[in-house]
Length: 260
Image (cartoon, rainbow, N blue to C red):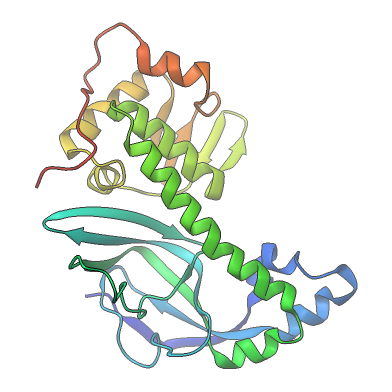
């Protein structure tokens, strides 16, 4: 079971940790905003995360801002699951009830894939934001971005071929966390074949075959600390060419929902 490291509690300057938030403040006020906007930071260890305790449950305030690390949120309905990958820059409210007005029973699980450091954007932090409403607006924008990312992932898993889904997913994630270097774009995110299967709604053996095919075509290569993407992102005619190539591939098509 994942735990919160209380001994590692410290105060952090949120805007220094997250420069994109700092950029929302005009230059002549930015240094002061960085000094003023502080929050408690905690570490969460790898493993299943059961959200409990005053350290991570806040009835008021904004929520938790992920500063480092990687975690996955799974939502199950009648034995089928959807998965959402979350990392640096995401705002979470894991204690918030799941759609109490909904008619479908849902099971929600959180798992920390890489040690996560979070900033607690609690009521005290909100008081500090009173002087910097533009930062509050940027944080609200993060929630909108998260919804848009989920919609994009839904579009990805509707593609029939698993190799196409994986290629699109890697580039989609690279838009958030990737960095360009001389031999391609590095996605510094370690994901097992099982996790990738959840993210693209496929079976793990099919994902393994699809990754092998992408590697043979020089599109995706596994690294010790993530993945190397070559060429450019799929889109328009390049994506159509990838999806419609006539030669047989090890990766076969699957339905968009994983069979249990």
